[in-house]
Amino acid sequence: MLTIILKPGREKSLLRRHPWIFSTAIDRIEGKPEEKNKPGATAIVQSASGQFLARAAHSPKSHIRARVWSFDQNEPVDHAMIKRRIRKALAWRQASVRDTDAIRLIFGEADGFPGLVVDWYAGVKGWLVCQFQSAGVEAWKVPIVQALIAETGCQNVYERSDASVREREGMPLVTGVLAGEEPGDETPVTENGVRYAVDIRRGHKTGFYVDQRDNRRLVMEHAKDRDVLNCFCYTGGFSLAALKGGARSVVSIDSSGEALAVGRRNMELNGFDPDRAEWWDADVFKTLRALREQGRSFDLIVLDPPKFASSPEHVERAARAYKDINLLGLQLLRDNGLLFTYSCSGAISADLFQKIVAGAASDARVDARILRRLSAGADHPMTANFPEGEYLKGLILHKPA
Image (cartoon, rainbow, N blue to C red):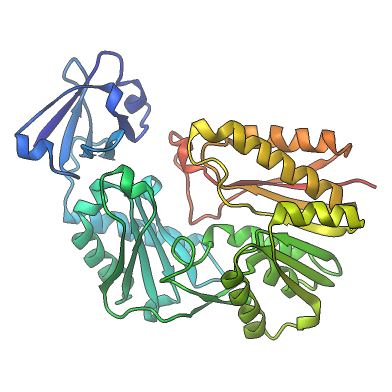
């Protein structure tokens, strides 16, 4: 087995139970040459003085050189550990998630599987959709899939390991069937009484944004008799929630015609009145400026843009984009209206996001009140010592009369 020895003083983050070891923290790696070059090989991590710190998965091509499996010296990395952790993750979802058959079953480091995402759609007759994003979970792919099937009873497993993060691990992008049958063009799921058609093979991420479930419910609860604007709507998650909640009208904007077509299909699945909804294939920034010039306004606006900052060096540019979009949103919001605004950029902290939105409110000359801070649902737990896991953050703002 490999042994990773850290430089003096670089053990502090691991003692605080942060699960990543960067290449710059490593003094040397001891072990057989073939093990050193093997992606995902299990390694013992030690301080410069020889103190045991963790068992981790070694990734020889990544800047994150190792990801922690366990801080417990007595816990081996084996099949039993995998089954135990999947069983624990499943029990938590069964206890904490309601009114849906679309859940995040495994959320990476928070569930003890660094770099693994598993979404479960449509119950035991549906699909488990996996993203193996690190060398460690890639090395244990077969036992993980076997344990997922055994613990959930779901026989269909599909891989969507097509995120660019795999390339940083030195792994190719991969999609395809891992077990059972291939999903069709539409996998029907239900969330908070709303039906959605999920395209597992071609949709964003694993096909659906399960992380916004609780926030879609909030929009549903506040939408009655309001004119709603949903920006970056994708397949209309927030739009359908607003229609379910009794919105007077909903305008949905996205630059993907294919996503909008699915949104219209979702509206049909639910039997909503098509006269209450408009679907615009357009650039959101340009469209919001045009709406401002036209004097349009709305009672409830959702801003859920794609990731503007994929790494720390993009933060400044992303901050400008977030400020611009929130300025436009506040200018289009009616008095006593609500703005639901989000960032899914992990490099943008919750504190920074709030400061950006506050700057937009100041420029818009709006004394906006923060009614609530938002995050992903209970099936996206965070560990206290891994702030990187908090990628989704949001705010509900009220614009006083």
